[in-house]
Image 1 (cartoon, one colour):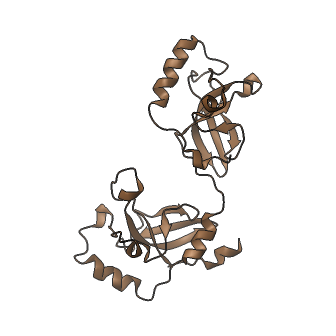
Image 2 (cartoon, one colour):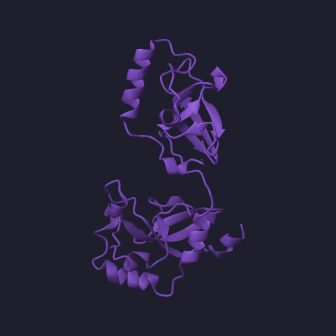
Image 3 (cartoon, one colour):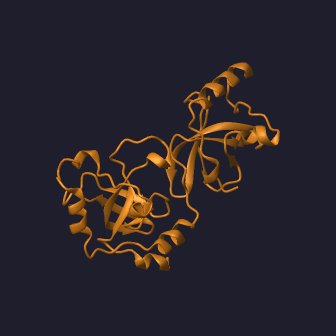
Length: 226
């Protein structure tokens, strides 16, 4: 894509800090500066500042995700930059360290990241729950399924409640109209049913689904195509 010509090795960014434990909300999410080590399409290999030549904490990050920003973003919103816990004691004065590291460095423009992040992409993760039509029931029954693998734009799904010897995983695209957020069936007047292969009673199925959905692993509504 033409906009990716703006990506260069060595560029600096402010990105979500995976090395600090935080609560699951945006206010407590922490960020740190990282360098682009290499890139392939929208994926960049990043290294947090402070690891120097050590590559043990390098990680791939999709530029289309929202948790990456130009250098200076945290300062503009009065959010402190916090180094990963593993390297926190390596440097006595992190402010001076960053001043030296960022002097003369290039970063992405806010316009570039906004343009890239407007591109639709697959944000499903392994373990997320969805509602999906039962392929063996002529798509007339809605079931609960778990994302067991993600490859590019494709999801591998497994119906919940089936024994391993009966369950048959299947693939679909993340933008398929056959998958919906948990709660969709109730909203439109459908009822969740066990998939073909369920051997127990409906009441046992309802108890199982209630237990599964209580784990709060539903795929968020905003990542669906509808």
